[in-house]
Length: 171
Image 1 (spheres, rainbow, N blue to C red):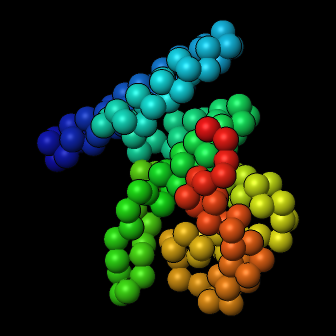
Image 2 (spheres, helix red, strand yellow):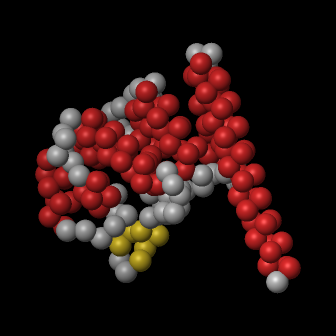
């Protein structure tokens, strides 16, 4: 029993340490942003999302995406959302691509990232009718009603492809 208690304490301490490191990166990026140093802000977020200890922490990805969106780095914001939620390459399961994003499903920011990605997508495509389920299906992370996916493609084929590929946006 003592070994299990120590192991649990270690796991909790390690989890807190990772969160503290993420908080430091976010704070550093905030200081850079306040100093109007966008290049250093981007560099800080890039380092954070590549750091093996914290690259799966949703708050880092969320702050990064929000910074890019506010600074109007639309292509980069899109890439950040996609890397956090979908990943750069999908894995196949029963003929479908499934989620392989950096932020795990149980992370407290996971759903918040999806909701903000939805707002971002609606704004980019200038269509408030895009749904969260449709967006997830479009990016092949859930099994869904095929009709929803077809409706998105019919309504916005070029815009959705541009959003997915980062084509035709700034930065």
